[in-house]
Length: 357
Figure (cartoon, rainbow, N blue to C red):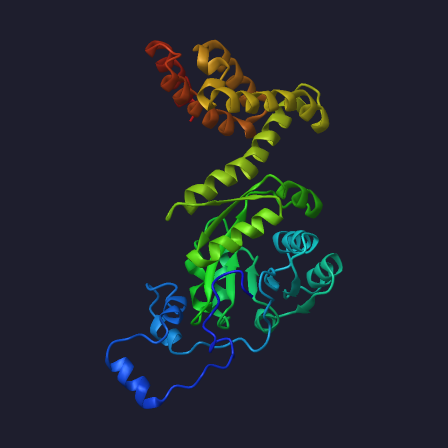
């Protein structure tokens, strides 16, 4: 594979002209590095404690290697929603997915049926001999365990799809001449086909070794997405925002639907009635900014309306009250920042919300 900087030729199993041992000794004694490119390729993460051991043992890949300019041969560890979606999407885009590993036989079977042409394994280790780029698409809590049980060959790369964890969680799988990174599509994976469609125009957060980032950007592009590079140490905040945008928004929709049910609307009716307002609000935020898009009683200092809402929630939808109060507090803070409330109105609203804590 030539998608990222190749390992030195000797690590790839190619023949090099032999040098006279005495000449080698004299050159090295003079402080001249005979193969500086190899040293750079191996020195991918100098903070790792075991770097010296890996640099002395390149662990050369036995056979799989894509042609120059071709995409890498891919293997996916994990045949759940994310792994299967990426497998199908990458295959449709012309990137070869050669293998999948999953301990769940039904998931392996479904993956193979949807992707086609893949070898399926129960254990991730068996996949390493078949591929160049390993995508670890398992739950966050399992990534470290998976990486700890693998050791890549020189010339291979490994990425995970977690929005929370950094690339360093994959460090135990590294050997000399390997690279690690992460690739997190900001997409809901509730349904395979819907997720594949959503990848077009989506954002993919990438990070990891410098030589790998160009490949990850290419991979995002062939899926119709745009790669963005996160600042170091920001993934937890980035991922918390993603959770609010996906799961948090679903929780908000559920609360809206429960209130609509009090008014006699079913779920479809609630989405029809309130969906247009949601879309308009999002459009306003894009056009005039988030703070400018804020409307409602919290921007007007309407204490009577807030009091009536809270009383109704207590009586008919108590499960929604905490979410409403939390959102109202954030709205109040935005309204104050915007300068749309008098100090007296802000204090009255804050006191009323405090009583409902």
